[in-house]
Length: 443
Image (cartoon, rainbow, N blue to C red; front, side, top):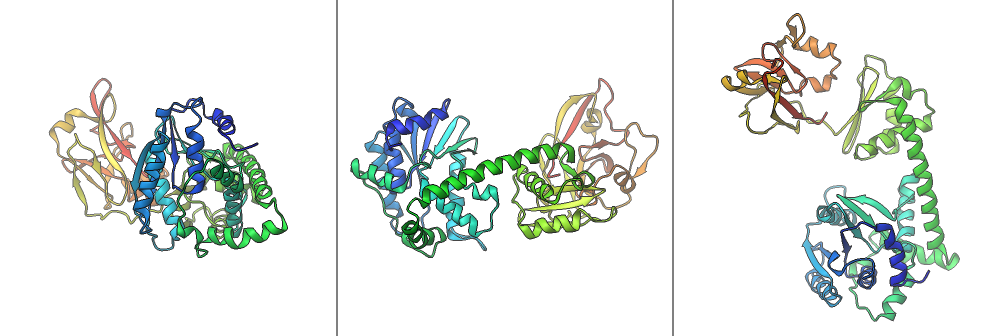
């Protein structure tokens, strides 16, 4: 298929219902070609629905001038133009490429609203390079699937309409239409992994196998299909293994090792947490699954951790230290109170027949603390006062949560345990106005 506006319109038919089209415009040849193509697709999109956005990473002295060139380019085609400056300095352990990419995509995500589509100019060679980089990182099928044509992005979607076209086809289009573009000098720096592949490795492969970009891209598509099948299998396995947000170890152990690994990866990904590397995945398999019933092993990696308790696996972001036991926070009940150590927020909603009785809330001072030891509570409907420690054990609350559950006091008397239980005599009765405690919890 020749690269023409008509060919692009064929792909745009997949995006029916889009309200606004955003093109990520770097000013390089690829995005310049895509901008020109999109500006010609008036039958598929109203001119007012197309916007170009340029992200200035401020990493090159010439970057401000590039923004001017992108603005002029968009203006000449009648396309609305936006420019955003970002800080893209690499943090410890992060490559400059990753820092720039993360800053760019975080900014673009913030722009995309429901019904919006972000279009990028990735092409066949970009796809082949991505697969090769993933191979060097030891990626599995999901990583080797590289870049999908469409994917959820922000509150909308990301669309890559040029993946089936080669760099040579984009260059031919640019020459035919006498387009101008920006040459970023950093694109020639082979100190960056992708540039090293592009300038040193891919030319060697192309001399031996001229169609290498097309065939490697086809492998990415095959890996995408395999990854999709693995996800479908994980969804089926999850139905028998998951209870709420936890995994039952007894049911997980019925699966083969490969299905266990596949399911754990899928489970972590479904919570939008970083995937464990092979070493951490091995640790989950070898330390958590065969652990004794009373053991509480932990496997953690950057951005996530998995714990075991009473035959279940719990997944979460890394926990901060438990709050100081001496801490006491005054809570003005009409406001939202932010808890320490990233433990979320508390607020009160007006309800009837549940929560803390409003009569108590109106005449008592409200405060929030955490476990110090020796607390007692008589949960509504229970016969006796119980030690909080014993109560939490009997109710199966995992140990790492117990010191992090906010305790709500009225005039220094324990009235509620997080948003889970109300202590007598503070429970609102049937028909009585109440205040429902809502804990936006990390658990």
